[in-house]
Length: 196
Image 1 (cartoon, rainbow, N blue to C red):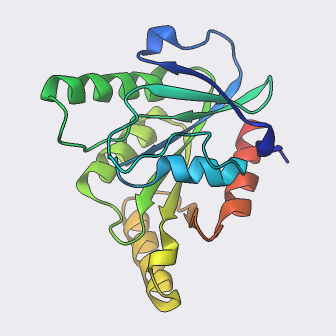
Image 2: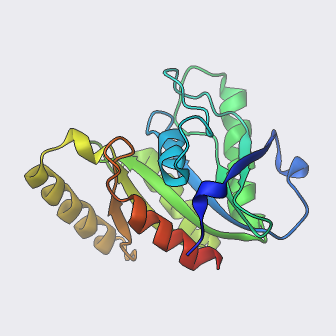
């Protein structure tokens, strides 16, 4: 199993052209702007401020890379669906993400993070289609699980599983809470399997 606690910030890349040329195995995190990607990464690596989280959605505007060791890294992709940036900037982010997911040779898998209270939005579905078309491994993280009671959590998981089944998607589905550390070990195990 990979030791995620050794993770450190490597660099921010404004475009695919500026990504490292090495072949270190990468796993990317994708999700809507306010879904808590930074908090998920920080809880996984056991560090409070490694990935910058903000009260302002849409803060991640570049591809942020974090080295776990010489052979593996985590990638924080720009959040999608944030309206308070120009249309041109939204299109640029969309293009860079599409290119990264479709073309990056060393990308081993994508974790699509959704808010457990509002899963499978139209934007999430667009991202799911993109990742499916890329042929990459992928999994779904239902974040903010602590905001729902146990029964509602179970109902939501069943509902999302059913919807993914109807889309012919393999349902690797992890209820998650960065705050309460729910799902952290499951995520670590999954990503270790993808990268090792």
